[in-house]
Image (cartoon, rainbow, N blue to C red; front, side, top):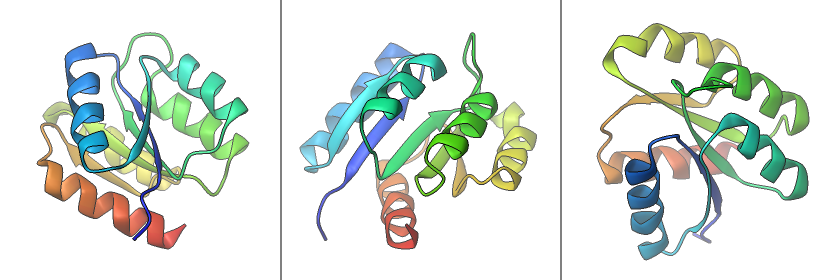
Length: 122
């Protein structure tokens, strides 16, 4: 399978940078945004196949960002990342068009499997 473009949106620098590095090591093309606002700015200038989006972020939260992403690029698939206490927002995100929600910390193999399923759906 061709590797695809991924945008990781998370305000936790360590998490975002580590995940980006691990995906790049697996030959994915990865961009990063530390906020919902930055993600939308990147999305207005380029296309991504998959967006991995943290639900709980300062400023524009994940669900508000998801809503804007779906307006701008309805076909991009979004995988939400939630903490334990945010499962309800994960379910709400699915109603809003997210492909899947996963609880942090997510095993890399599981995340990649979901990314590949989302890419096939796209």
